[in-house]
Length: 277
Image (cartoon, rainbow, N blue to C red; front, side, top):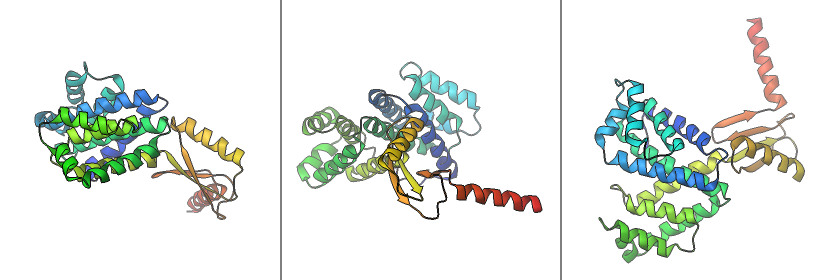
């Protein structure tokens, strides 16, 4: 989300996104989409129950008690992956109880984005969602119809009909968006959703630095290795960097996996300097 979270919530969001990575690793597109649906359901429950949010974020409350509360509320309605994510959420520290709703919503959007990525439709999803946002903003009648309160069934039907030729993930996310604005303008909600999609895209784009241009075979082998490691399709952006001495430097978002000789030499130099001290 575009929301700027406080220290504890910011750190916990990082942990939750890593937990989501594990939850969608190696699963099918349908499983990832089902996870998204369940996380949207959990978002709705949390949004409508301030007492539950406060109980799950109370720093004085025992972690086991919070995890048990999650199991009591969601154990019979959610599958193991989404339930596991909510239990992880309950075990973390949060700056504000209000942070839970946008964060779980972001995880839900990212799970649907993972479904699209597994099906090789992530770029299409982002493009279609942006186009839909522009169409709605530019049409007074359509915007009015999709922002009318208390007309969720009609809005869902309208979106489904309008997007019958679009990617399934696009329709799914737009239905969720227009029926769960939660005080946001529809433009603000689209901005939040597009932000979350971009955040998930960054998790599956590898920025690779090498000294020399890679052959098609080498690139294909690298993509296969990274895809196997991440557990879903990975796209590779390759940068030729003469300062790289052997090996490959790979970066996913903020995570750097540097296997270059120059990096190892620098590490060895620091170790030797430490020994001399």
